[in-house]
Image (cartoon, rainbow, N blue to C red):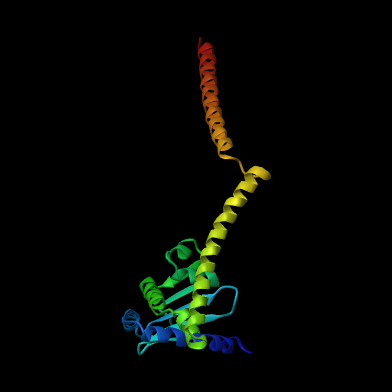
Length: 210
């Protein structure tokens, strides 16, 4: 299967979900009107996949890019591109994980549109499996996300303690403080030695003049 055929197969359900979200959100509909006729291209690093997103007649069209005109172009790894929908969308651009060229205002409006129209996965699952199962799955996903955040924080703390206390690869806070004291002391010693050498140099120079 060709890359474009595979991309079309994957993009079709995503397009349907987003357009369903636009239809159910007055905010998304307003953003779609503002974006009428504008296009954004996504290039996914490490793959030949390039996606064109266009807005027309109040709906979003997703299709494989043919390299045509786009108001803004974004390129980056999948996770970096997804981070654009997070709480700090500028961070992946600032740190270079995402390359942005073109009209940044258009990029911001596309981001706002996708956030306003993003599907409620619990609602979509309810259509297929019924409300009780969908609600339970939603709770499980939310609980799993909270557990993952807590587990990651615990792992980072434990790793830091292990590297400091067990392997001694990282200094403890008292050790860092003592090291800074020693650095200050060495700096002072060097300055005093330099001043002493300068006095000796001048003294020798004055003796030669006599």
